[in-house]
Image (cartoon, rainbow, N blue to C red):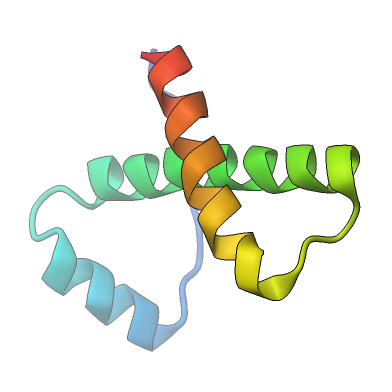
Length: 74
């Protein structure tokens, strides 16, 4: 099922979207949102389990937990 939504974007973001996804902006945005949701869930898991992470370790754990979440969702 698909739900139609309307969003306003800053000019620069709109231009970048047109360049990145000519002809299929909806699919591009849907994929980006899916990735962001997984990443935010991973960040929440880190904070819940360990508190605020060391900034140097943060990127590593986001990538690792995001990949694990993505594999489970498949």
